[in-house]
Image 1 (tube, rainbow over the protein chains, first blue to last red):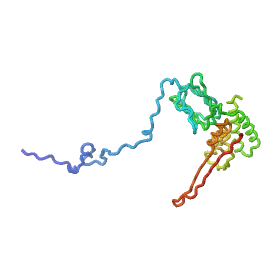
Image 2: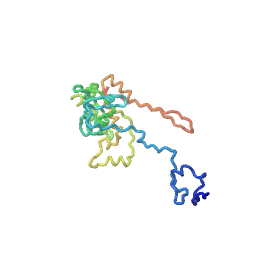
Image 3: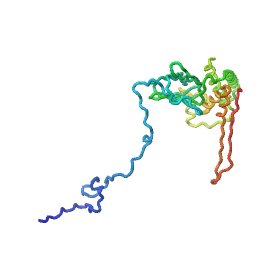
Image 4: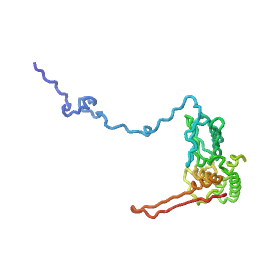
Length: 199
Length: 93
């Protein structure tokens, strides 16, 4: 015999009104009605964060690599770009430091002095650096950024000695703190150039 | 040598006063005299450039020159440009 269709639940929306996404994915309240927090599948992408656009950090090797990767830049020139070298000696404000593959990651401020790059076991190239910063990364990539880096052979010994005498005179005749500091800078750099030239 | 460009003595901000205080690690001499690191670094560069041998010395002079051209805009129209050109003197040669 004919049986009555099941009685609709109280407060249930009519079938043609109810959206299909709610039927399968939505959460319903106790009465079967549309729940207040129905979860609608999103049509938008999740927002990107800055890390999504960055290259992943280079892997830190388990054993130190055989050679150092050196990047040595000045604003107007590239001295070394990704070159494989044995060792670099850097004149930091806290003292001279030698960087070998596997060096602890460091950031140092350089004082006016000589950067000595040991290419193979024999060849050493020396650059006089005016000032700047040196960075050693965990994968033994070394970045040296200087304002002026000249091979030591390009320095003029006479001009350096004359400059040193000039700045020492300027220090004596300095009128205010600023001029005194300028003269001290000249003395510091000329003194470093003098010792780089071996005097 | 160091070019004798005029320097304006600036009013000191809070950060500047903090770095110049005579604490356990006191500031560098150039910081105490009122120079920024940028100024100190560029001065060191000038001293090095002035002590170069001849062909490199003239090549380095080009790096020291400063050329700026600025024009103010009033009501959408550019006014007369102001050109600033600084060629520092070369000392010692």
